[in-house]
Length: 161
Ligand SMILES: Cc1cc2nc3c(=O)[nH]c(=O)nc-3n(C[C@H](O)[C@H](O)[C@H](O)COP(=O)(O)O)c2cc1C
Image (cartoon, rainbow, N blue to C red):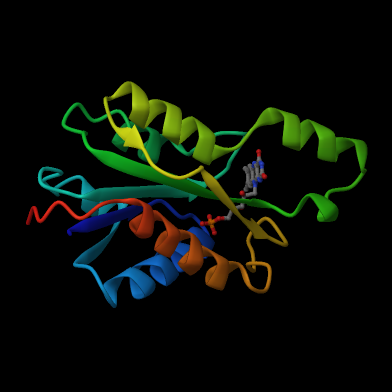
């Protein structure tokens, strides 16, 4: 069951989350981890699961990963995640509502992938950083590994690849 995890990351936190997922899935599945730049040259055919993640910036994914999510050769099962700021750290407090209401990258990526013909598995997931540049909130890497595990448990093996 070949899995590809593609991520964008400016300060490295989303990269850490993606790595935690890859380390978890690698124990049972053929899993490749690629930055969005590396993914440009990767053939997306024959995957059993594609996982796409990015930071949330201005309520949406950064341009490079949005570009990836609109590739015409996307198909098959896909799941999305993002990193986002811990709402409790935002001051003044009313701004928290604005950030939450603005939305997050994972939902937008899922919508885009779905429009390209992918079947979205699992719920888009958000993992939290405690400052704009990080670090990740304690326990988020472990939660990411569990989320990734839950995806493959939900996806039947096809024997492809
Ligand atoms: C310019 C900018 C815009 C941001 N916009 C949002 C946002 O709309 N919502 C949010 O929850 N976090 C926002 N953040 C926090 C980012 O999500 C955080 O920097 C990111 O998760 C770090 O991931 P990375 O280390 O992989 O780049 C923003 C950060 C920056 C620098």
